[in-house]
View 1: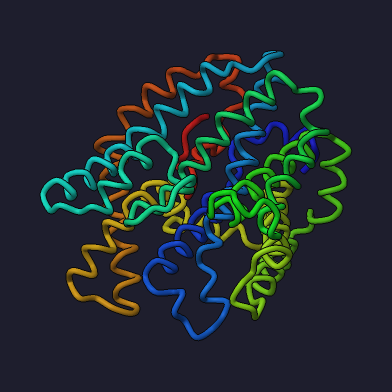
View 2: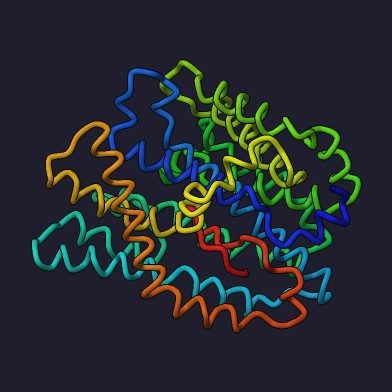
Length: 360
């Protein structure tokens, strides 16, 4: 694959598979994976970090390609598409939780619902299952800031980006102790790494360097070994350098899967069931805590709890997508302007854990 081929790539075929791995890891973590005997199996929460990396890369790539195609970036179109993609499914999930809180008074849910609805849940201590919405809030805040910088400071932004990354990761090393707790968990670090990867690969020299470094057909397999090795760090606390090392290993895996379409992991990452889980991974993330509650009510434990939660949340995501979200996605797709359409068929439904394969 040449740099020109990369710029013309409409769908990165392996990324749905990476999303599937990420969402399965998150479900595993929330269904008891943190209690595993093997240290590497305690790290399912890192699936969110992989989603952040993919999100940063794809959103930044979309905006870069829009500028190449049109000479500018339409923030109004970008935000309209984002709203039509993100809000309906999320607010449906919140409506379900609100109904639960109304039918069975739950102070924790009532406390959390406003923060979740306003995408502010990474600024406060969340008390209920809605604590997972911290990642949705982080993505929304990313959407508010980074695309605007790409539009209005497009010449200086690439040079300023590394400083933003350093500022984002300093709290994980103990700096700024008064910031909210989730900011100490590398919230924006992996997103900004993904944005930096987009800029590197958009430049011909950067792409050539990355292709030489991770462009071999076996590079994704080697990168996956690197990820697993980094995730096996023996200490229970991986704040600081250990988690940064994991992020750069995940970055290597992501880069190796987009600079070369035909690579050794492609058959697994594009296998039908795996890819489909990745396609609806956003919905799986939204509904998996509801599914977990149902499985716990049914007194499921261990492997049955994990597989049952995954299956029920997958079914819920499919029903939501086909009967509810599709109506909004159709309106979103009509909002894509013809000049942009040539460049925006990337898999850019990357809201937190996952997304559907539609444009922008």
